[in-house]
Length: 250
Image (cartoon, rainbow, N blue to C red; front, side, top):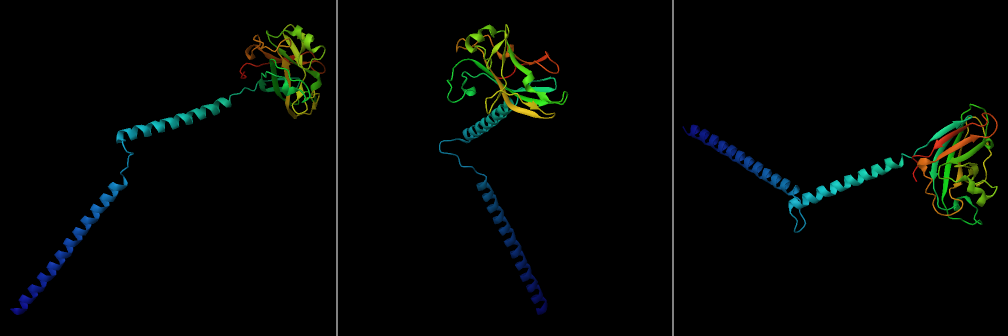
């Protein structure tokens, strides 16, 4: 009888200990969960500046994002616009002439020596790249004439200012003048011979659009102007090609 009571007592004690341990585990788990929830709530809470509501902060953030996207789009558009410069070209007697750039300076300072007098006026500078495609062997650039044609050009007025020197303009026809092909580095006339497959760049012609006054020549625009390359001797003598300057920025 006593042994039976002892066994019952021991089992009751073990059961009580097990229940106590289980309750403690549940309690600790509950505390840990609460702590985690609080930490999570704290880490996701954003402090706003004094006097600013949550709605105002959201509006300002969206506005800044929109402005950044707009700025980025403008930069992309600017890059695309810079890449649309035309490169018109034409081939005459085996020489391919590509107009790299066409600008309209208001002084002749870029084509004179440091000791010469700079003269304001209305000028047109056309830069070339020339390639010998091999169709006619060697290319002798002294056999080519470089001309400008525009209804606004008064060709018969050039001799009054330049005399017989036609570096920046000489009479060809009523609205057509010729100029000398020049080297950018030396500003000397170019009379080079190009081998087959050879390319020459950094050469240009410089036209005075108004030799009697320094006022702009309103009758000359790039839309009504074309560059004419004429073969003056050798193979294909007296033939020519025209390169319009439409599309080049003013």
